[in-house]
Image (tube, rainbow, N blue to C red; front, side):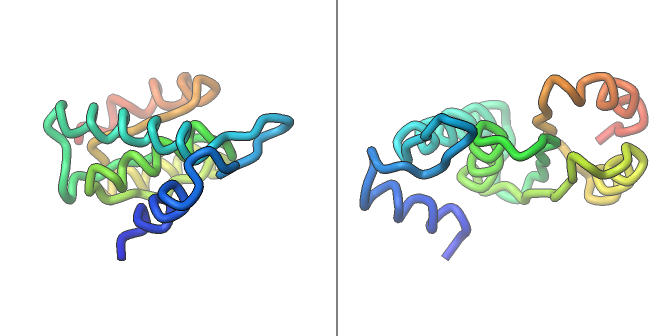
Length: 121
């Protein structure tokens, strides 16, 4: 079983059920599943897919998790970077694992912009 299969099982069983809670908001399996499908389809349309490598640089956030699910749904390899890691550590991880796609929250945009020239892959 792939990791995405565990999410999809919950989605099949109870599509309108609450998959995640963030602050005061509930996110249904349908909502997060549809988001992950849009992300996966976008990645595949852009030429990424099986065994391409991607990461999500974000704090604990449902939309960010939907990006991770989208990476897995597209058959990609997920690279774990941490929002609390120093930029140098995330740079090392992204470079060492040859990251090809990076989703990130707006708050990390300045750091990502500074690292981007040193991440040619």
